[in-house]
Image (cartoon, rainbow over all chains, first blue to last red; front, side, top):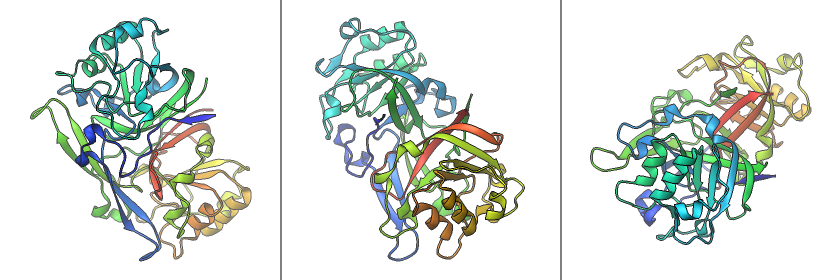
Amino acid sequence: MIYDISYPLHPSIQVYNDKAAKRPTFQTVADHVTGSVHETDITINLHTGTHVDYPLHMIANGDTSDTEDLSLLIGSAKVLDCTNVGDVITKDHLVSMAIEEDDFLLFKTKNSFSEHFLFDFTYLSADGAEYLRQKNIRGVGTDGLGIERAQAEHPTHKTLLSNGIVILEGLRLKDVEAGLYHMICLPLNIVGVEASLARVILTDD
Amino acid sequence: MIYDISYPLHPSIQVYNDKAAKRPTFQTVADHVTGSVHETDITINLHTGTHVDYPLHMIANGDTSDTEDLSLLIGSAKVLDCTNVGDVITKDHLVSMAIEEDDFLLFKTKNSFSEHFLFDFTYLSADGAEYLRQKNIRGVGTDGLGIERAQAEHPTHKTLLSNGIVILEGLRLKDVEAGLYHMICLPLNIVGVEASLARVILTDD
């Protein structure tokens, strides 16, 4: 069984803060009416739908896609049921969960059930990120378009990214039960950027 | 060992027929000089670098990404050494190769060794495509930007796509020896399009 946990990309996809300028545009540049092939151009922000953040996104002069380690993106992943935590996942929530070194955690929250942007989307607190750093996990994925909201100084992003913990945003987890899976996350191979669009699948462990 | 056989995407990447209009553009829309985040927009044709073609690309009213079957894109793959076949891979070349039902074939040709577009790139002939259809393979991948050149009526594409055989274009195979591998090809999850940008990796079988 393959679970596709990537957000389908289309011109009316939900985007951060509902800003129209962040929506992707699709342009048909050749079709079968006027020629013999069909081709599309898209214009898209690299933080649209399912994507990986690299350190440069939040850290001046930070690492880019060029230092990506694919081996972190392929392996076990734990889907955690956070549908009842409300607006913010804190250290207090995390200490009660079975979290171990090298885990890749995927937070299933209310975000997965909304097709429009939730201004009160569930996010990870700064103390939650610090707890995960201490636990030495591999990465964290969320079904929100951000791992945090607009906290001043972006402490959640910075704690994770400056410690080599992968951030994966914009997942769709509504059809996946909590539990252990094998994850394959393959971002597009784009040179020197701060994020990349990704397809992510889970298979039964 | 993970072999990344995806073409790195950047603004000066080689494109079909060297047409400048087909090159992707990257725009930094936020940075750490004027703000606290770095973000990039890209504009890109869906046939740039490593990508999957769906039937609509060459067949009017053909199927799109919406009917994609991921199970065809994950599994065994055979890298075939075609570096000495010259300009075109024909049925005569293929009959001497060990090709079996359900194979996903990856043609390693001179194309993999050029960073600029080869107007005489190696492609698959119409009779070669017909032979592969009879063999009932799963898919075919090439390190050229097209599985054929501009043959009238696009017979190679049409024979493959109208028979459910996946076409994967724009691979980079220069660092991969001929032989059997496990392939994972994950195209972006884009709704209703004729092609999608993909990341593709091989691991030892």
